[in-house]
Length: 46
Image: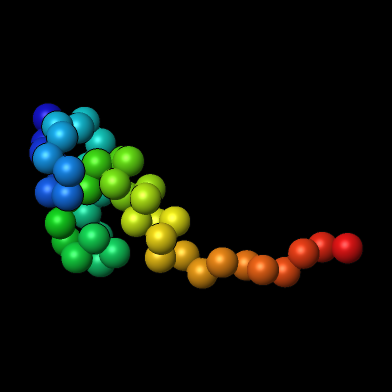
């Protein structure tokens, strides 16, 4: 298993890409980062 560079937990699934600055993030940390960086769509359908 690999270790997440953000939280330090060991995880089977690791993400490393430009969003994580090529650091290895576990699923939970990557999901958190995704929701913090994605623009919020404030449009509401009528």
